[in-house]
Image 1: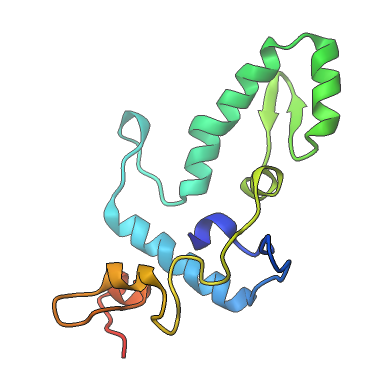
Image 2 (image 1 turned 60 degrees about the vertical axis):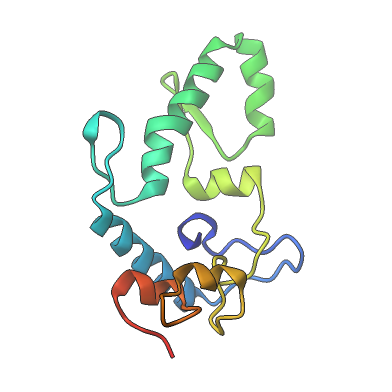
Length: 145
């Protein structure tokens, strides 16, 4: 879930993360997604899942919600939700702003599995001959020791 939480601090420790590791994991996940040739609404492809979610679902939903409010209700709502803006009858916000608003990271880096192969999630990437691998080994064809 590196693409999702980025360098946001954990909820329990408040620590930030090694940015170089975060950047590497994000890049590897984007490459993995691109190889999947995923298709979204109307068959459109996407490389960045966060951008896709923002443009196809989250911003249109928030725009619809805000448009339905009375002006006075919107004027009360927006100062409490500073991660977004309202301009030309459109809601706009970034993925990072959205995440900071709705939740905090609960697991340390990497969030999905452990570098030392000790997390239960590592077993998901194992093979018939290897019990546990890091997800990068399964997505790139590399094997881990």
